[in-house]
Image 1 (cartoon, helix red, strand yellow):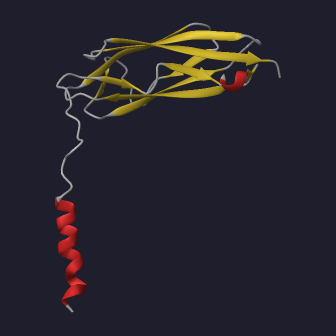
Image 2: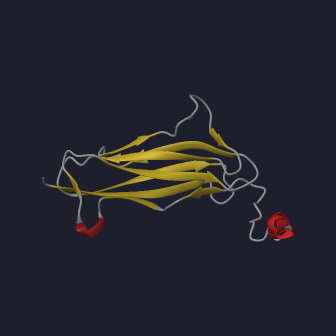
Image 3: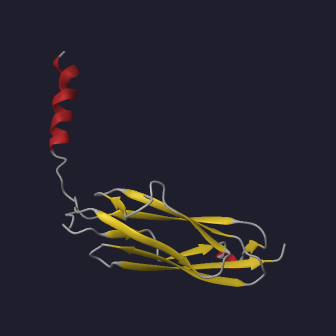
Length: 145
């Protein structure tokens, strides 16, 4: 009869053994984390994007510091085949603020107007202690339909 209720103490003991091992210590200063260093548009296997068609790529941004990360400016340079959608919640004036572990996304579209290779640059300016300016390369290839 007493064995039926043995699962509760065993569960408590098992959970007590789950400490905070492996928990990373966050730096005090804001830290800009992006999920990649370049955005590629259908360039795998020497493929490309048909001229006139649109493909999308999304960049993940997160604050891995205790202090607030301020995204001051996000700019796109290069040919007009690349367009950018600002993150949701971007204020009309001033920086976008991300608290600890807060994240946002930047969507970039590629719509080639010719059958050739295209290259651009996405620049993020912030108050991050691990680099106040981050530049990412944009690469896409237009192919004839």
